[in-house]
Length: 84
Image (tube, rainbow, N blue to C red; front, side, top):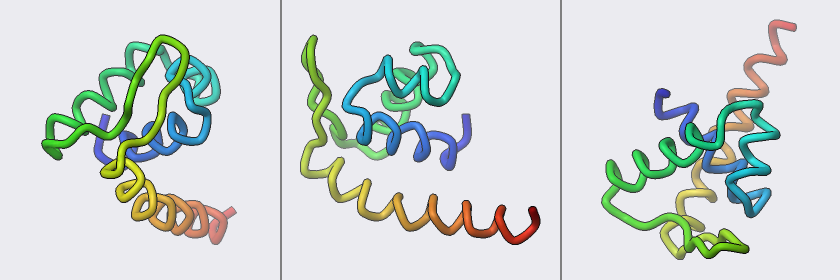
């Protein structure tokens, strides 16, 4: 999974507050969602999400990343729309 896909997964987890619901929405295995988030956290050297058995919440670093990722994802969507 490339970085852009990881950002998309991260944003979906943040929006849904759940790895399972994000996996369902993206139609990918839950293990792929977990792996993408873990790879991002390792690459960036920060914790992006607080995880409990019932809830997933953004850390301060996660909030900062999400604020930067949202415009990037929106721009990619706009580019795709130009050619459809």
